[in-house]
Length: 444
Image 1 (cartoon, helix red, strand yellow):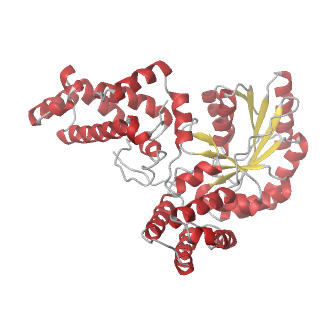
Image 2 (cartoon, one colour; image 1 turned 90 degrees about the vertical axis):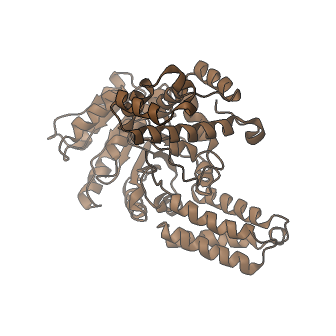
Image 3 (cartoon, helix red, strand yellow; image 1 turned 60 degrees about the vertical axis):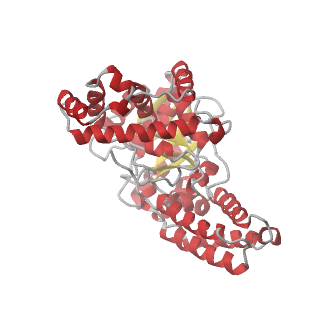
């Protein structure tokens, strides 16, 4: 059992501390606002946000906060948070920007970026995302330099169950790209995703190759794949590619890392290009449309209920979900239910990450993440229990734990960890399903 730090988490914690101090004041003076914004400024700089972006952001927030309606409000701290939230949304791009899939098929999408940014995996994730939305997709590998790059994309395309095309590594990349589009036309594919080669850093050869590929296939979308962990460096890379190929949007990868978040908070503002998708994990399914308002809410610890609902709707069987809702309303939740739900939740991502999307849990340090290696162990432990123990885990005492540990080939401390996690999860699920605490919010 472990807990992961996500991108923006340090920033979220620091902003939360700043706003907590503001809430402790009945009325706000200009000095209070200045002090709070000084801390906000430092927090953003520590998150590796571009200096000019921070300066403009703080100036915009300050101008709005010093309005008499805010300072004289009965809830001035809430007004300040609201303003910061609105300005964060603006900073992140304002609204979600969909891919341009208009016109006659096949629509061509070219992916550019540095080596190591996760470009090839992003191609597969984007392909799966489009396939789920009813598109017939062909992935084309133009990376003839990196060992096994073409094979990597072939395997990823196979996992996503989409088409794949490449040619001999001695073939010029722009020729492969053009032939790939021709293949898509003959195969009546809707979308072509062209994975181009990267380098360790921006250089003239890479840019010239990118220019030739763009000229050969005239893509509808030229997407930069940027690594969230590179911070402000991602902005420099984006500007360099934009100058040569005219990027139309950005896919931000490794958002599930412990990156400080500066890339996401800088790149849209610096380049004027929207972040269209974010990659949030290693699985092909860990890929989301980027919603600035939802990201701003998560940064400010307000949760992200809409994304949570979308994930649940995609992963959960509706009939099972309805049955589980009835159980939760009756305050019934057993270890067998726990195991079933964990299997469903596993499709959605980390349980801890999902909890952070719920208002109130955004900054909670709850030890609920489960290492993938623990799944087999958990199943063995639950299967070693009697039906009564699964229904009423409260009766599991020391002697029962020792018996279960022997039967499952585990240790008593493993039983203790599982039970602790179960009781935490049950408590939270009961809270989420309680009408007086959640209003009209439902998981499904």
